[in-house]
Length: 438
Image 1 (tube, rainbow, N blue to C red):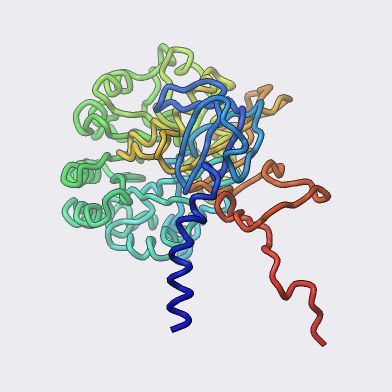
Image 2: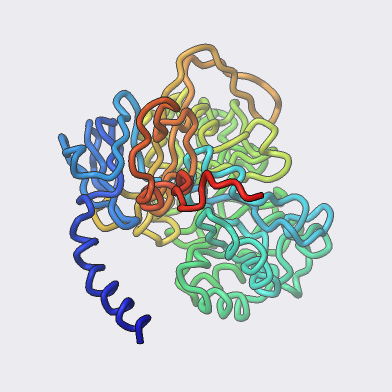
């Protein structure tokens, strides 16, 4: 009986306590906000409440927030989206992107401002649910997936060349079982002369109303790039590894985009950087960008090789593209609103009021920096993007220089509401603290 009375009193008190909370949980003040989805490119404050964007406007009041962080001189963007990543780690399979070649996401995302990744075909319909259980459901990073048209997934040669395991119907059925989580169909690494993987992927994508991403594998005269981009793929499908030079992407005379690229873009095909371990050459990217053929999205194709090679991370990819001609605004759009639209998740990649509060706070370092490509050739630059602060679902998940921290000798104040704005709350004092038991 006494418990019931206490519980009732607590319920009655809850609305009153909620009313006493400040209007915002977290306020980012004075940053240069770049939000391509909402056409914002200006100094603004960003307010967050209950895990969502509450307001984006100048001169919001610090007194209205539990926590205020000064980000003057920094760049505030939506949380970055890496739409080509390999995260299906943990199966123990050697030499496999459904195993040891993939990387668990959380150690590589937040420190680069990335809050959402898309696993690009590491799993197929046969092993997607195992991947979901082992990685997707256990990650703090938002992990979405493109389903490989190969039912066994990206498990290496004998699996990925198996035409009999490329089936549209079960692939589409699995994709439709997890709408919004499975956001595309992937075909990759095929070396044969047949069109089977592309054709089956397009059928699956059409049935599930999802885009197809193509890593076109070996360059075969029997399935030319021109036919892929002008006949086989649909508007809204994605060609990744656009600057690899491995499949006739470049016009040998002009050094600009090939006829296939030009006509493919005119048809509505999207082109993704997907730099990876061996899929980006300066000798393509520089002349093609000079001639105006820029990416529709930036991505890493991150895995155990590319993370230590020329790609490194998402902001390294963005920085190297800025060195050769893309603006800050372009690379931000290519890591936020543009990939969100390509995967039909326009709820992500923006700072609209009511949207999930995924935010990246970036700085531009000045100095001397070298950026490399798949041939280990270098371009020098004088600036580099660095992630200072990453917010996922309204809470700080990475803080490079302690922007959200108080000085150790400053008054610490009330820590009881820390969990509303950070994933690293300070300890809340308990009655037993300081008591020594003998």
